[in-house]
Amino acid sequence: MVQDLCAEAAVAALVEGAPDGFTEVVVVLLGSRHSRVRSAGVTALRRVGRHADAEPYLTDRSAVVRACARWVLRRGGTDPVPLYRALCAHPGARPAAAVGLGECGTREDAGLVRALLTHPVAGVRACAVAGLRALESAHVDDVRPLLDDSSAAVVRQATVALLPCADRVPRDLLLGLLAKDRPRHQRIAAVRLLRAIGVHTEV
Image (cartoon, rainbow, N blue to C red; front, side):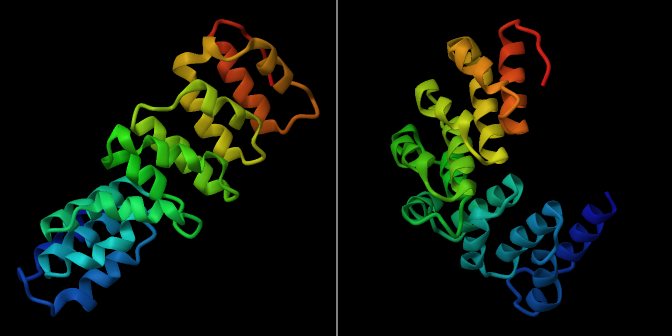
């Protein structure tokens, strides 16, 4: 709460359209490790007339910051959707492009996001699952293979996507993931999905 109040006070002190406060205030806010403070900094970019500087924050790890970046760009006359589509062509350096596109794109973008489910970078795969969920296009057959992923982040996202339709995941597959030689994150995913269909077991 204190961080929010301080960030809001700093932004409120900025003069509309004046660039003077950019270095002293906005840059400091943008550099914060706290997402709510960063979001205040991104929002302040509009206030100092630097809308285009919001573009790097389209792929921030925080959904709140990404939403603020989209708002600032739109206020400056830039549609963020084409930017996300371009970023998804080479998302290795900015994995959150996939989830960002899911948050503001249309179902026609699902194919572009779905293609990233097999990307070599784990962060991209995880964000692709989240992006498909946002587009309401996370199909069981596409996401199910990711339960076997070596990345815990990817498996967590796949599990969340599959929970509403856990009854469509083969039970034998889930029971196989409970094997003691399986990584712990895979076993936890299997337990969560089995419990979702009424099968109670332990890791």
